[in-house]
Every structure is written in structure tokens, then in C-alpha cells.
Image 1 (spheres, protein in one colour):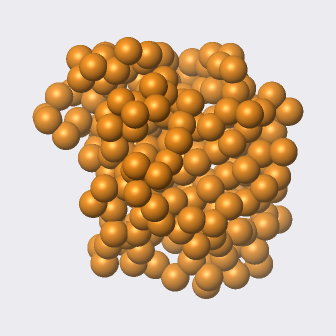
Image 2 (tube, rainbow, N blue to C red):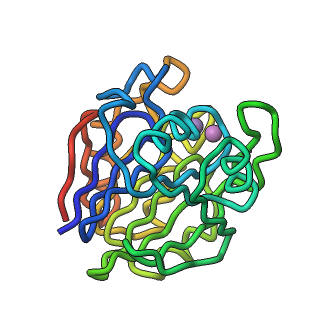
Image 3 (cartoon, rainbow, N blue to C red):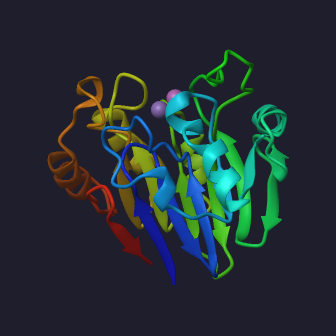
Length: 227
Ligand code: NI
Ligand code: MN
């Protein structure tokens, strides 16, 4: 059993095979966050890119929990410089068998500068194959790209994709992404945090379910989906 939680914005939680994973843990200053950074636990923290709404509370959570950070090589070096002891560098196209599953970093069309202006390498998405064989694609911040078809070829059980527009794919491109990815289930994220990315996820879900084979699950911040 795998449990996916949406904490609001692009902040995700995943419990799989006894491991707690946080993805882009942005709680402090996140108007959509369902909880506080002090209230979450993690064994691993995945950072997709350097922007403040994705690095978020990583350093504080690591200090309290001793979690390992997994990110691109540039961000892994940066968190080490900030005092994180366990940081695993990967890079786009590269996969590694972690205790919680096989994690591959995927292409993302976006930026990645870190909050202090440091170079954050290339932004990434995550493709995780859990130990029980489920494939989860977490696109995080990205525009639409045609190679989502290649990711879809892997057979996606759960796709987590942005629909907010302005900084990432909007509803129309996110619908095209679902057609490329062909997931069993899709969960929309990165919307309604601020007015700039206001969207109606329910009408998007109706459209996506009418035009694709995917089941769309719209979570409220703090809600979970088990699969
Ligand atoms: Ni970003
Ligand atoms: Mn973002």
C-alpha cells in the first residue's frame, strides 16, 4: 500500500514500504499549506528545483529529523554547504535504487536558481518505481514537453502534474500532458496558492475525465490518496 498526500501547492508526501518521503516541502509562507513544517516527519526529502516554493523548509526539517536529501548534483552540493549531512546527488535521466524504490530524475522545462542566488542546476521531475512496482510520476514545475510521451511509455499508475498556469503548465497544456502520459490516475497540483495561479480543479477534472482514460483525483490540501 502506498499513501500519497498533497499538503498544498507542490508540497507532497509519500509513504511507501515503511519510508516517509517529502517532496518540495514548502510549509512556512505557503498560504495553501495544510500543516506546519514542525508537524511533518521525513526519512527522505526530494527537491525538484531551487525555487523557494520548492526548497521551502528543507533545511529546518533535516535539522529536526535527520532526513536524507535527494536532488540534482548542484542542489545536493548546496544543501551540504548549508549543513545537511546526507545528500544524494542524481541528475536528469539517472535513476538509483533507494530503500523506498527506484527513483529517476526526469526533464522539466523551468528554472532552478536557489533562494540565495546560487546556481541550482537544471530543474527536474521525479519518476519513482515503488518496491511493490507502482510507477509514480511527479512532474513538479514544468511546461508541457513532448517527451512526456516517453515517460507515459513506462506505464504510469499515478501522475501528479501542475495545472496553475503562469509559472507552469496551465489547464489546456495539462490536459495534453494527460494524453501524453496516459496515467491510471492523475492528481493536479501547483494551483490556487496565489491569485496568479487560480484555477478550478473540478472543471479541469471533468474535462480530463471526459477526454482521456485517466481517473482524476482532486484532493484538498492535507488529504491523501491510497493506491
Ligand atoms: Ni519553480
Ligand atoms: Mn513552483
